[in-house]
Amino acid sequence: MNDRRSIAQELDDIQQEIKELEILYEQYFAGLERREPYQKRKDVARRLRHFTNRHIVWTDLKFRYQGLASRFMSYGQHWDRILRLIDEGKYHRHLAKIKKPSVAQNSTHSSGEQDEASQLQQQLKQARQACGIGGETPSAEKVAAFLASQREKIRERYGDKPIQFSIDTSDGRPRIKVSLKK
Image 1 (spheres, rainbow, N blue to C red):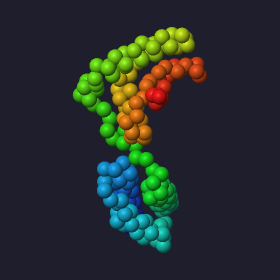
Image 2: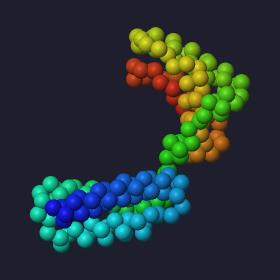
Image 3: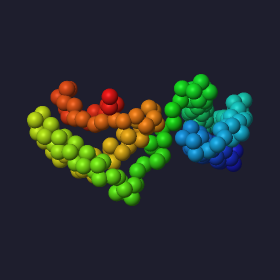
Image 4: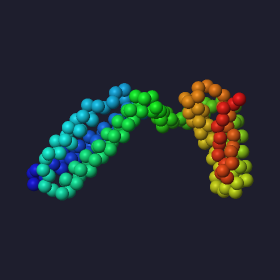
């Protein structure tokens, strides 16, 4: 019975290490960590390999080990794919998820941007009514926050080119469309 408890405890530890490793890799891919957590990944792989040749009598623990091993392998393949994309220069970090605009940033928009957001909100409201869509129209503040996030995404992708927003109802649903000014 003591052996069963020690195996269960080791599997608990491995499961916790896999969760920590997943978080570390997500931080690395987001740019918060400077180095890949390679050593920790190697340690977890070594601990899992320790169980490969070990005979586990209890079916539930064997099933749990196999689940952990397959989850770790899946994560490993996912991480390797993203690392390969980073090396090839094809991976774009999702910085918008990290730097969400705060209320203080939203209040510092210029009056021109606030006017544009108000106009778009009114146009969106009219377009929703024309398409027969009920419900609440997003507030001018939400529209302004959306426009600010879109401006940031466009700036990251295309630089400081001038952009304009308009309402598009071509597919029967109103949505805000972004285009480069000519």
